[in-house]
Length: 298
Image (cartoon, rainbow, N blue to C red; front, side, top):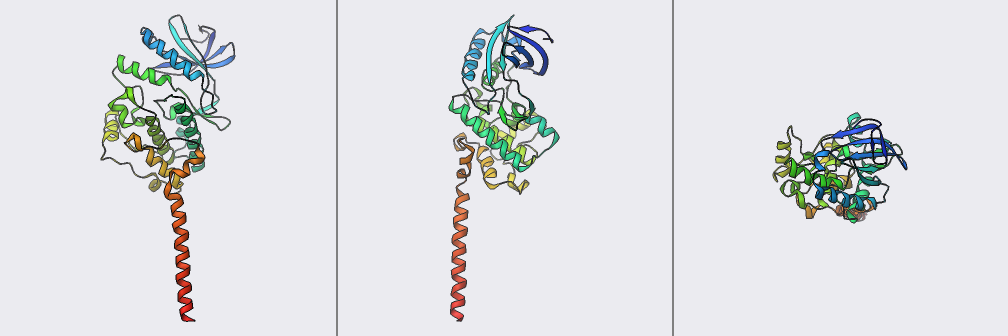
């Protein structure tokens, strides 16, 4: 595709991104400027796939949340399928990390809250992202955090497995169960990916690094390989955040935290309250002991 080409009611103006599973263009349409994701031609020969993609797009169109990019339209033109989405101003989290890594703690916490709330919302709507990584997280100029490229990733992943025999997701951010049975993963796979992203933001590197996809997959799948605690790498990391990351990276999907409002996350660390209580009790006991010694001398 080239600038000034048209797809349906949309005129392409500038290519924003491209990869093996499609291109993204800035385009002019009936509702103004949009981001147009164009599906690769080789996938268009499978009508069942296109129909599934359409159904998935219809589900995403119903979503309305400040942490999720808006999807306006799905269409086909001249043998190509496309998705018209909200055009965002800002940068991806990957671009932000290219300038500074690790990120300041307050920024990590802001991104943590934004991502967790957005994922909790889409999971409640029955949608799994399937390819959560810094490239698919957008930081808006206003300071917001948005999920992009969601929902359709599931369809494109399965298409990629059928056509090329490879996973669509990025191995470094994929959960252990995704390598065993990628078609039947649950929302817990997104929670694992969230943990990987937060680990990277907090420490400056991945929990399971490797030089090849095979070496990364082997580490993620090996239950004997445990990443270093982010709190040891980053002493200024808030304890609840470090605890949350650790739980996200539990290889048992059932043990990963359920995502809810970020304000509730401190409750996910049961020791946080108990430590305060135990500290207060210990203080009282110590005070009573010292008072007893003083009384004995009197």
